[in-house]
Length: 290
Image (cartoon, rainbow, N blue to C red; front, top):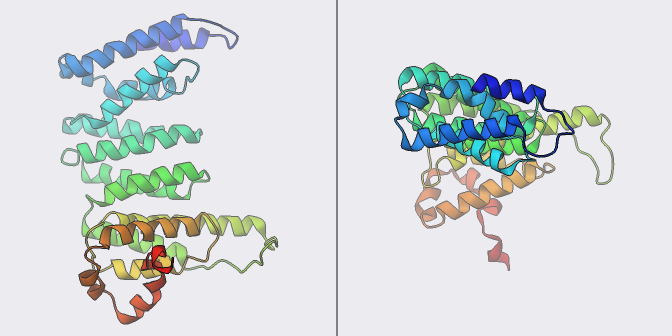
């Protein structure tokens, strides 16, 4: 049936109006999987999961047919939440990673949360190698040209860090701290940088660094690991950078302030005097000055 749907897709002409064999066949196939996944013996349908992920990703982009989009999205969301066997989880993870090779940013934007959900749901069946590959690939998209993809990658990486080991957190910290070593050249308000292309690339690199460090901070909303004070200082030093760097730093500190407000009298003891001096303005609520 999957091969027939692909064949019908090739026969559809752009000018076609109304239901086609492709749309009817796709809905029949997706309805079969939708019912089979939820109400039938899962072992009979889940074995097909790796083979239909690419098709589901393509079908959810048919925005001219709301029902088809809804069925494809529902099936994809369900397949990312299922607890698979070890072999099957590896296959599904590999196929989802392949979706990130798409040249269309909105396909990547939808695939990143699915990978995150799959990693969390199958963290005990996925091998260490595939989990590391998923985390590393997600981190790469923090430097994507499209800001929506960077934001989706940031959200996904934050959730993955919550389940990460200490050496993985150390690697992420080192990796994204290095992206902040090179500072932006000063540009007067209303002026154009001497090298706009190089300037834009550096802004993208520094934004990736800020997003990566923000993931570490947001992954631990109610604790202060020993590495966090230094990370917060690094983020505070980026507050004068242009958007979207500045807005990312502001959101991170606003969330940190919200989650640590009740325990700040104890949490502040984890910071040195110099660190507290740097962070004072960032951690004081704007309402204080009202």
